[in-house]
Image 1 (cartoon, helix red, strand yellow):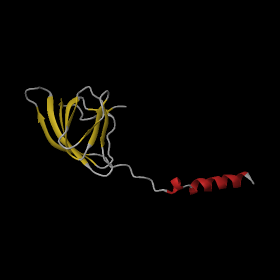
Image 2 (cartoon, helix red, strand yellow; image 1 turned 90 degrees about the vertical axis):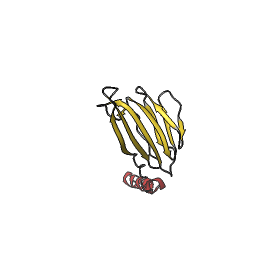
Image 3 (cartoon, one colour; image 1 turned 180 degrees about the horizontal axis):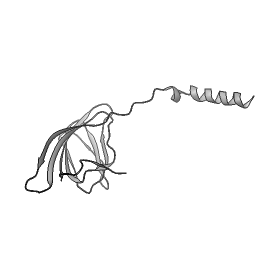
Image 4 (cartoon, helix red, strand yellow; image 1 turned 135 degrees about the horizontal axis):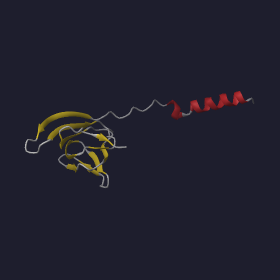
Length: 137
């Protein structure tokens, strides 16, 4: 058997393996962030309160990040999994809350379900000109 026939057989074998014939799986949809309220905090110069909702489609997750803010999370629908570096991973359901401080790195933020959406409210107290989210490598 020649080398070219052997290579051709190998290519055909690899192409016919089931995992190479499956349609690529779609990545989970990204979270949808909707602003609710932004308010300068007159008695705390340079600070603002910012409120928004986050909707996680099934399977959605956030990259590792920080907020450089005091962050208060309140779950409205579904269930979410949260964890800051050095803390325990927690699964939250409607009516439960989570806090992360200005120095915390948010290492886990995701929808706990692969089939149902989740929705929560976030309230941040942050420097007025600071970004809402800072990615962490």
